[in-house]
Length: 122
Ligand SMILES: [Zn+2]
Ligand SMILES: [Zn+2]
Image 1 (spheres, rainbow, N blue to C red):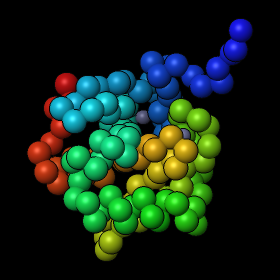
Image 2 (image 1 turned 90 degrees about the vertical axis):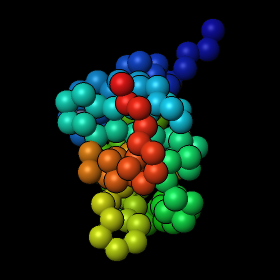
Image 3 (image 1 turned 30 degrees about the horizontal axis):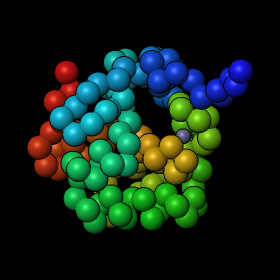
């Protein structure tokens, strides 16, 4: 029997506060939200649906260069996130290029989700 190293999605912990991440089904796909600190993660395909294309492309290109490693690790694969800064004055976001996760602090989450129609998070 193979034992998967990946934790079950229901058991992911927030990398910021270690609270448990809750899977929320938004209109555009799955979103992981921390109930305690209100940060959260979206996957790249979800981000593409809610954020402007240039924003997403910039963010992902920066992430792929892996120039700045974050001290936070991806809850899904335990690799360090890559820190991403997009444009001028945009909140810093973090990405896992392995899982296609984009981790957003509460401010960035609302900025990104507010770029178009916000996700239904409940
Ligand atoms: Zn948290
Ligand atoms: Zn990951």
